[in-house]
Image (cartoon, rainbow, N blue to C red; front, top):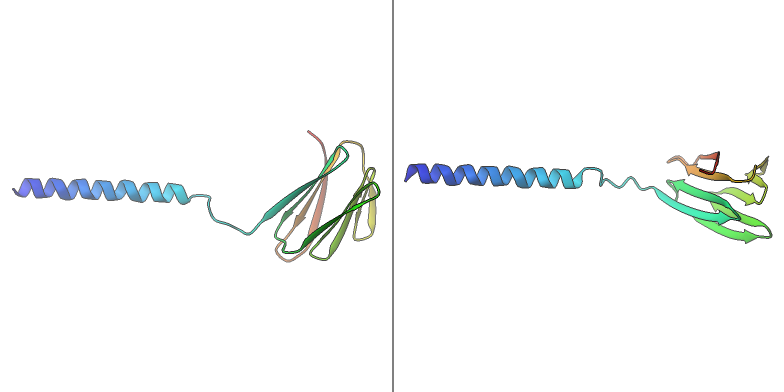
Length: 114
């Protein structure tokens, strides 16, 4: 009878270990770091706003879009990008990515469409 009891304890330990491994694998990568992402289209251009932000507003303008995120004004038109009043000419087929850091700073990247 002792060998039956040892067998049942061994099976219970193995089952507990399998359940623990499944739970750990299921939770890998599921940590929410509070990032959000919004994608907008201006003509053939994609404007993506991502990162850690709480306030985001968007407004359509004559030939583009104006986005205000965490107090920063980003305006994208058919051929121009303006971030807080600093303008930059955009080439056709370039996409714009705006990343908002935890401290509220904004980083803007312009890359050709793939």
